[in-house]
Amino acid sequence: MKTDDHNIKITHKDKILFPNSKIIKHDLMAYYEKIANYLLPYLKSHPLTMQRFPNGITEDGFFQKNASQYFPDWIKTEDIRKVGGWVNQVICDNKETLLYLVNQYVITFHISLSTIDNMEYPDKLIFDLDPPKEDFALAIEGAKALRLLLENDLGFKSFLMTTGSKGLHVIVPLKQKEDFNEVHTFAKSISNHIAIQNPTKFTTAIRKNKREGRLYIDYLRNSYGQTSVAPYSVRAIENAPLATPIYWSELDDEKLNAQFCNIKNIFKRLEQIEDPWKDFSTSGKRIKNARKKLELLVK
Image: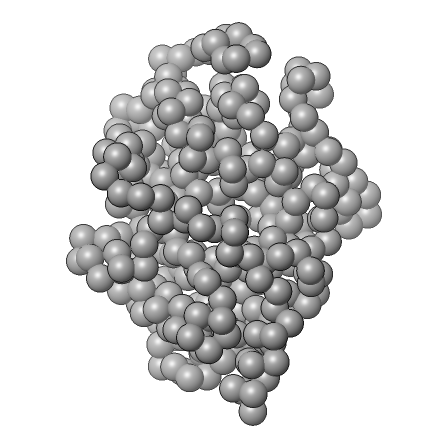
């Protein structure tokens, strides 16, 4: 597979990675080559955590943060601080790197919540809504409740994504002016407020046996070193569903589910709609004023 600067040799292109849906490695490579212009803006400057499945999705894959020593020297890496040391992570800023990694059986791309030039300060705030017993309708309710608070009361612009797995992500772009401790505390306060307002449906209880069928509003990933799945990443689930940016209005579509888009139908969708996240990169705000507004609400 030839790109502008490198000729990447695809190995084992006929290897089956998704057995039931008969998706082979070449299909995955072709998808990522075609989706690159949509995906790369979200990967750019964000340290990667790679989820690799060398033997296909029916066997355990593994998460990898450290770049392998055999990666070619044109793969950009950056030393990132971790507890007790450093980790040398890949920075995927171009199609060549993207395709090389897919050839190494990276199926899913997870990104840091901050950029290499400002690692201590997140550029996004994320709420993960993973519904109990696959009750997607409850995830939808949670997303709508979050949006109402975030946009109407706190003045943010929020964005929505199906995870490609079970639930939804609600995401707020930030200006990287407050550090992870501040953002984490703020996210916790928002989640607690939502749960207090709707105690029969939502909870922030970390232990599953305390949730009692309620939707867990997960704010914990808003911490240094945590990651989120990148938009348009493939999930290691049969039919190769995608983490897919959607419009808020699509929550009212009865056919919507967390895996409604996959590598076979996404391009038809992109031909028919405008990018739901086209304003994402220009919508970042500070949390300073919103924090004051939230304090008044929770009194």
